[in-house]
Length: 620
Image (spheres, rainbow, N blue to C red):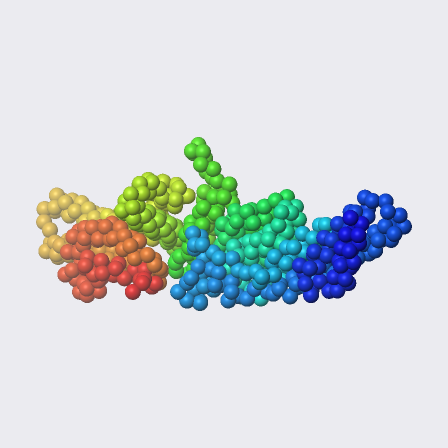
């Protein structure tokens, strides 16, 4: 037995003194022979010769460990090359074009093929070297070599994709267009990394460190941690950068994608050693959610603080209203995500959820701001028209969105019936859930109330001109005064003439003519005053009507349906009153000189003039 181990020792020594690269299998066999010799000389007490042999075996084993480390490092380094973009794209499901492959989102149900990180011919060699490191007690060095080599290679792969560590300051200084493009690209890179690169690294690590679970998890976690942090840094930087209302949609897109990938992240980074990696990914999801929530809250506050002096001169829909209306409409496309962010519960207790409260808060903030803006108008009627236009815009925006949701739901039902998929038969409008069933009806009543108030304020003076009292009271008083004066003259003359008749029983011809003249003058004066009063009526109406029309010609109602309904409501009040006015007072003026100068409008002309109101910004 001694001679056998001496012979094995001598043969192994000759192999160990050479490079492992000349023949890994022979080298590993030599290491096995040395380990066998070491066990023999350790267990047997042979004397000084045995001690010298054991000492030499230990020296050779240390040299073998160093040589194996070098060989492991050499092979791993030579085989570890960054994965090219083209290779990654080939691993994705086939698309119709290269552009589609680069920009569109992968199909969640599609089967992906993992990229090859290392030539499969060299994986068994690396695995054998790693396994032998355990016998030699140098596995920690092998783990470090693997970590450093694969970590740097993975970083280079991501760098080729455009992924590097970024800070919030760097993101903040980027232009909006550039930032949006980078977010789209980042989402794509995140998907490639989670679906392709990290699973490939996990598979490679499992192959090389086969059977060593603790080592595999540790090596994988260490090799991917820096690349993962670099990848997530962009999302963290976006979440920490300065907020703006539009930013919420970018944040929600990123939140959706990271949340969709969370289960795959949990799977690929399973195990205690990867706990920090999983924590980094879940922290990003939370940061994006908090940033989106804060952005909405800040936007609501900014609406309330928006300058009340910033109003339109024609009562048109304010840019803030149209912006918020579209903003809410787009928010509704992210309901699922927003419900998670605001921790919405479906307890059915009738209380508003966080998301519903937030949407309602945005609308309330706009309405509060609009009320303040409306008070800035010197013309009260224009302020009312401003409120009517803006609230109507919000209502119509949400109504259109609800109709589009209902249309999609109806189409889904039709499709599900064809496929016997009956769960789609329960139709529920998520948009209605957000604003409440009676919200639209209440706001429509508000618009109607503003319309009624507008008619009273804007057309009150015009309608007063058509009333039996109105502007004619002063004219009537003057007429009565003149009639009284003439009457007193007649009465005095009558008394005098009666006394003369009684006293002298005769009346001179000249006195009778004078009396008749007085009565004739009285009649002419009364007729003139009646004519004058009616002319004043028509002139007053014409003036008031033309002033209102001239002013409101430059006002705007961009919603054609609202404009037509409002003009109709005014016409339904004004035209009957004007026809009655013409019937009562027209005959007294129409036979006078220049009657057309005072009776300028027929009912038809009046209606036509009303039809030209609010046409400034009417869509063609």
